[in-house]
Image 1 (cartoon, rainbow over the protein chains, first blue to last red):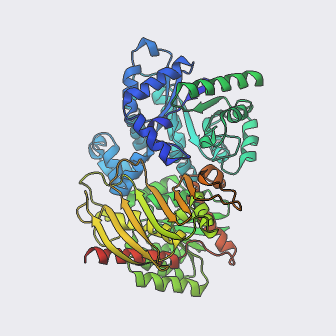
Image 2 (cartoon, rainbow over the protein chains, first blue to last red):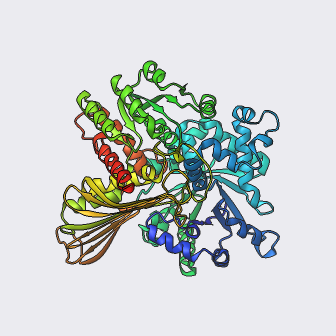
Image 3 (tube, chains in turn brown, green):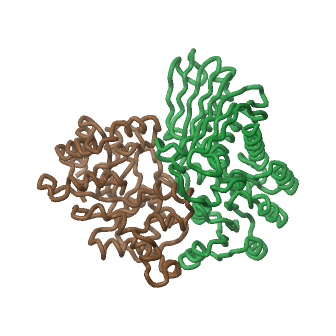
Length: 287
Length: 337
C-alpha cells in the first residue's frame, strides 16, 4: 500500500464534526466532474490511491479511469457496502425486502433450485453475490485492496458472526484476487478476533489520532496494539474530524511505528498539498 | 455477568445485539424473533440460544434483563410480561401505542424497583448533553421559542408495505422519527402538554404520515415548533436539530456541533459575545465498543450500569418516554380536528 491514501468523505457530504459543512460539500460536489477534478489534483500532488465507498456515483470515476493511460498507475480501494442505502431500505422494506431489492436479479431466480429455501441455507453464497454486486462497477479498474466498511465489520464483530468476516476475506482473495481489508472502530477487539479465526497479519483501517477520537477502549490500548505490528495498518480520522491542527495531527500519526498508510480527504489543492507534504516530511524524519 | 436477552431482531434489535454482544459485563444468552430467515442466520452463525416465542425465552433462559426491539404494538404486552418475571427492561422507542398503558407500566416498573429505559439515544449524545448543561446555567436567558427538527431519507417513493406502513401500528414518521424530536424537546425544555395546528402529511406512503408539522406547548408555558419529514432526500441519514431562542442568545445543536450565540459574553463559562461553536469531538467520551455512534453504546452502557448500581438514576425512563407517547397521541387527535 502507498504511504498516503486519498479518501472520499468530502465528496459525499460526510463530515464528522459538522452537518452544515457536510451539506456545503454535498452542494459543491453534486457534479461528478468536480470529484474528478479534485482526484486529478491529488494525483498532481503525488497521491495515487483513492479509497472510496461503493457509492453509485463512483461509477463515473471508474469510467474515467478505466482504459485511460493517464491513470495507469492509479488505484482504487473500494469500501463496501454503502451502508446507508441498506439501512434506509431495512427501515422501509424489512430485511427480506432489502435482500430482494439489492441481490442482483431476483433472489428466487438467482437461486434457481429452491429459491428462498436455498438462500436460507446458504448465507455465505448470498454474501458472495452481494460482494460481487457491489464490485461490478470496478471491473477493469486496478483495485488491489477491497475493504469491508466499519459498520458491517463491527456489526459482525459484535454479533459474533466471525465466519462472515472469514467469508469476505476468502471471497475477496480467491474471486477478486485482491487483499481483503477491514475498516473498524474497534481495532484491538477485531485484531484478536481475526487472529483467533486463523487470519494472521490482516489489513485493517482504524481511527488513529492524537486525541483518541473514535478509538474504542482508549488511546493507550490502541498504541499498545499498534506497536505490536500484528497487522498492516491504515490510519483514518487522523485529523479527528478537524479537532486537531494538521501539523500536530500528521506528526502524531506519521511517526507512529506500526502504521503503514495514512488516509485523509480534502477538497482544495492547498489542503491536499499541505497534508501530503506534512506526512512525507514527518515520515522521512521518523525514518 | 449480567444475563441478557433480546426480543426483535430488526435494524435496532440487531444493533443492540452487537453492542450487548461486545459488552464485557454482559452475557447475551438468548435472542428471539419470529422471522425464520433471521433466526436461521443466528442459529447458523452465532452461539446464541434462539427463540421464536419471547415468553419461552423469558421463562427458560434465566435472564437478568431483556431488550425489547419488536414492532411498537407489541411493546406493552412484552414489557408487562418481562416485569412480571422481575426483569430489568430496555425497550425501543416509541414506548407504548396506548399512553395510559405506558403510564401503568412505568408505575409498575418503579414499584418493583426494576431498571426501565427507553431507547431515546439523543439523551446520550455529547452535543445535546452540552446544550442541557448550557440551559441549566441559564446561558441564553429566558427561552421564548424552540424549533425541533428531524429529516431523513426513509420513504422516497410510492411503494412497499411492511409493518411500518400500516396505520395504527406505530409505523409512520410520527412514531419513528418525530418521537425522537419530541423526546429531545422534553429532555432540554420540558414536557409537552398541548399541541395546535398539527399537519400529518402523507407524501409517498398510503396509510401513514411521512411528515409532521405542529406547534407544541410545554408545561412551563414555553411554545415552539416541530418539523419532521422522513421523505427528505437532501439528508444522507437521519438528522435531528434543535434551535433554542432566549432573551440573551440562541443555541443551535445537532448530533455533531453546538452553535451558541450570546448577546453578551459569559465569563463564568468563558463564552465570548457572539458565536461559539463546540464540536462533538470535544464533547464525547470514548466507548468500549463503537458501532454507529457513541450514543448507541452509551445508552446500553447506562442501562447496564443502572442494573449494577441501583442508586444510579436512569436518564431515559419509561415515565419520561410515556410523556412523549402522550404528545404523539395529542398530535394525532389534533390533526384530525
